[in-house]
Image 1 (tube, helix red, strand yellow):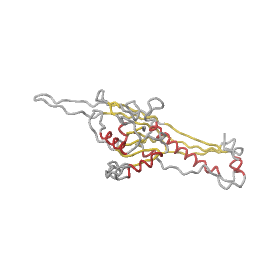
Image 2 (cartoon, one colour):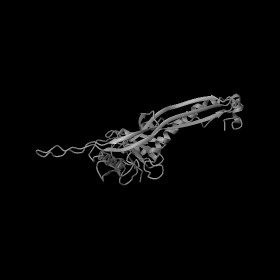
Image 3 (cartoon, helix red, strand yellow):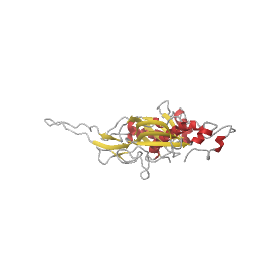
Image 4 (cartoon, one colour):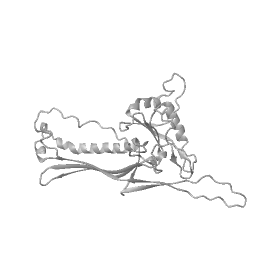
Amino acid sequence: MAFGTPNFPEALWPGIKEWFGNDYSEWSPIWEKLVMSVTSDKQFEKYQGITEFGLAGVKSQGAAIPFQDPYQGFQKEILNVFYGLGTTITYEMMRYDQYNLFKQLPQQLAKSVRRTEETVVHGVINNGFSSAVNPSTTADGVSLFNSAHTLVAATGTTLANTPVTQADFSQSALEQAYIDIGRFVDDQNLPIVVEARTLLVPVESQHLARKVLQTEYEVNSGNNTINPVSTARMPLDLVISPYVTDTDSWYIRTDVEDGIVFQEVDAVSLDRDNEFDTKNLKFSAMRGFGVAPVNYLGWYASSGG
């Protein structure tokens, strides 16, 4: 299949005032705000968990100091993948094209690759609650957003990075999220400092999110009560994304950087070549990267009510 005169007859004769449908504005890159980006030159990379020490024990008089060993934690492997797209334009189409449409083809291929980046990264988040269909699992083997993440050194103890009762986004829901994040612990079940950094919402929730983050006092109330989760009091970057598929879900990225890891292999490359026998011109675009969730402490999310 090729971009040729039979399927683009209108390009062969002057008279078209404007070609439309292939020059829309693009969203600024969103995925870069949601991942820890690293470079990779291997087919796959491994991320290995390790615990800290537990609490110190009492040293009895004349007895030895209690000794402990750290635990080897869970491991996550991220496979790098190459994504590519190409198109062919016939010699005749280039020769008779009155609008130089073929000159736009590399730009259009690059745009498709950018959209692929967004779709793949957001796919990790959109599948973060799934346990059956293409689940996004962290190093402990359960879904990214889960109420039962396993603590390596605290047998039988789990941690949740999602509400006990799923709720739509609201001021009260965000307040509870801060409480839950403030209760995050390490693999020894000991308190750690984890802070919310970014709020990710679908386009359907953008207005409500702005109200909650930018209102000084209690949202939708005449009470003279402060809004404790306003951006002025609890700085939180707002990211609005059309790639979030669940319209009432919402997500918080914390300051634990390796929540979702993006492995940069090759930046987008654009190539062109002529076929000797047909004189057709081929364009291609290729991009190499790997992405997956690693550390569940990097995220907190609700699927909505």
